[in-house]
Amino acid sequence: MDKNNYENSGQESTGEPGNSGAKTKSTLERGAEAFGHAEEAVSDAYDKTSEKVGENYNKAKNYIHDNPGKTILISLGIGVGIGLLLGGSTHRTRTGRLAQPVVHALSDIALAYFR
Image (cartoon, rainbow, N blue to C red; front, side):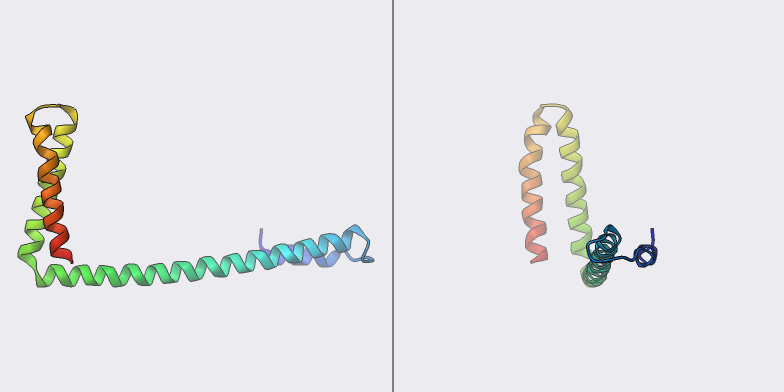
């Protein structure tokens, strides 16, 4: 329901301060005010988040453009690591025992490049 509908319905019920109509009006006004504050806070948070995501996307795009070789190797390493993890999670074989150290090593390499 729209916040204006709340305000209009509250304005229709008039009465003395002790009357339930005045209490309803007061409650509706407070509710509409709280709704307005919440709406504003969510809108601000969304705008800030959108801005930061856009900035990080542009940084990542520039890094990929400036370092295509590193990006391909990092992507390849991540793909191999995920493949080993998924393949090793169904069987407890030698592959499963080797997957964890390889993934840790690839993660360390990727972390070093992004620092």
